[in-house]
Image (cartoon, rainbow, N blue to C red; front, side, top):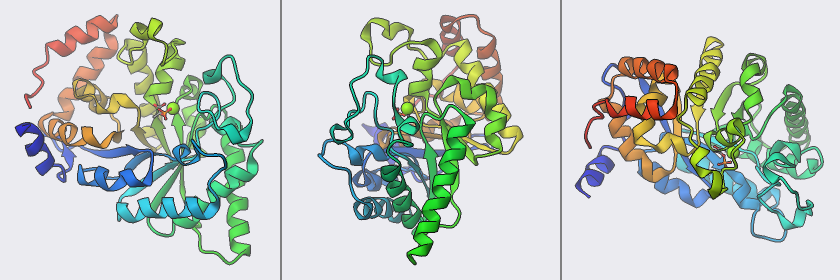
Length: 327
Ligand code: PEP
Ligand code: MG
């Protein structure tokens, strides 16, 4: 209780390590209403706005104006801080009755997110228009979920350009430039990060999904839950590869899965070189406080050792030897 009160009081301080490395700390939100609480808990931006929530549990899609207002509200709450709008991650297991997408046997490997946009172009365009219009209010960034090929992002860029043209023709105000990023949540992307660097401005690692796809372990299946562990040598090496390649090209890399809010693994994530961690707002004060007690240099050494471990248990044992600063 006392710790929590102290952490909250200090939540506006940045997450700067003892040796001066600053890690941006963002919040994950699902609705515009969650933004004020996130900022009062010390968020320095919205690292993931799950916009699909606006499309769920209703009988028709929100129109452009409704979306525009929700997006604008978050940008207003954010002030100068960045807001990453993830375009709708729907289909697959996130059922939207009015889209009439047939039931699938393997929804997580199915028709989902960016894969459905070409069929539902009108819906996607409407969302892009709402985001482009809202983006005149603050610092908006656009992020596409489940991208796997370069063609997908090239197609998205064409859609953005044509949404901008239509807004221009209608004399509406909109953002002429918008940073574009992808979620890294399909493992094949890791091998072509350099190609994506030619097309996008930033990356955010979706640890929830990339974990299940990397190991072929369903993130919601209790019977294989013991295999769903993002802290393995293969996972850490994958993160290192993504971050190193992106950094060589001066691209920003965040992480927005649940892993980002786990204090035990914070030294590893800092050590691997992530620029940002985005998590649920409630986790922010404690994570920021812990980051301020760490040394980035020691975190790098720790991450390097963890990547050489032969098993998840060895990594855990290594972490146990660390004097994690007390709360
Ligand atoms: C992820 O996959 O890690 C992620 C943040 O996206 P979601 O949990 O919404 O699929
Ligand atoms: Mg995901």
